[in-house]
Length: 405
Ligand code: ADP
Image 1: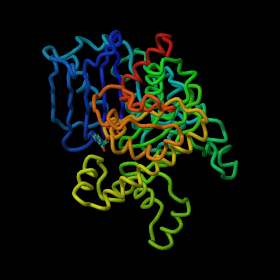
Image 2 (image 1 turned 135 degrees about the horizontal axis):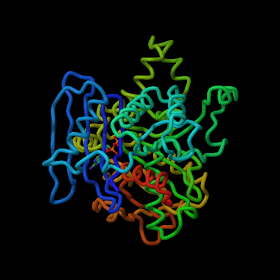
Image 3 (image 1 turned 180 degrees about the vertical axis):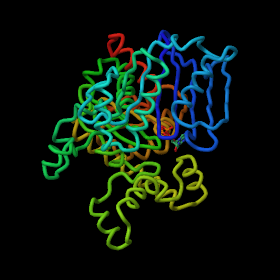
Image 4 (image 1 turned 135 degrees about the vertical axis):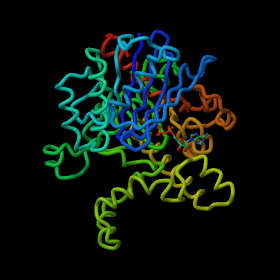
């Protein structure tokens, strides 16, 4: 029961081979700089175990096809490999960023599904074509194998119209599907499931706020196990302050920048996505560097931290109002899992709303899922490591094996 999980980007492919009988990772790796003069295929076999070893091949990688073939060569390598032939892989799971309104759940890939992913390219012009490259290449190399698309947007398809509609002329929604979709759904769904386990009740009875803080950041309000609102919108730019993305701004900003700075829409888009967020505020986008700079007296770094954590708090408050009863707040992803300062500042002043963080538990770092609130906290607070590859593999098991979520 070995599954291959593929996250295909425009110039990279991330992959994992997972043994689903034990949910253990047999290999994890990255193909980088596809289409450039020098590329790189990196694989770690048996990560986190005594048998761990790394293999790196530096070579030009013309396209996704040759990248995937290099991966397969590594996986089937007689000495190092973890499989003897491609047919040992039972199924493949693909991360697909945008499923639009076409997909409420993960689905077996057929020509009709591929057409629907293509139809949603206008909503994710950078991501969906790259995801499709990965799918096409895998279909060519692993002929006849079941392949499953797992969408970042699917978990949020339960949002009601009052949460997903922008207050724009309704025809824009009817004709062009302009609406909020939300992303990181696989991660929010995964940590919600883990949280339900820790709370000891079915997910369908849990009200949660899941806070995914990585390079990209988003927050989801989960009512009785389903997403009812989320901070990312039609594209992954809305909402929280991210590494290089602005999150919420006044929509009239575009006009101002055009009129007063002579910027065209492409330049504004690039600025909002790549030069804003934490990086825009202080020049740094890695939270570890921001802490170092702030500790050294860099006021802008401290300000960037304050702007991000204030926005987090504001959204937590909004989602508490959306949900009414909140069983738990869950922090996940690079910053959410590792940064006690961001967690504490994001929850500052929320005692009146039943959130009582335990400072010692918050500071203790274990790498495990854990509760960091005080015993008497009405709203419990958890740190739960996300695992999007495992989440995708579990979705594959649900789709092809009829397993229950
Ligand atoms: P992605 O969204 O690319 O999957 P991750 O979830 O891996 O990103 O998060 C990456 C971010 O996590 C980094 O930019 C860094 O700011 C943050 N991070 C990682 N480790 C730590 C740490 N120990 N303390 C604070 N922040 C961290």
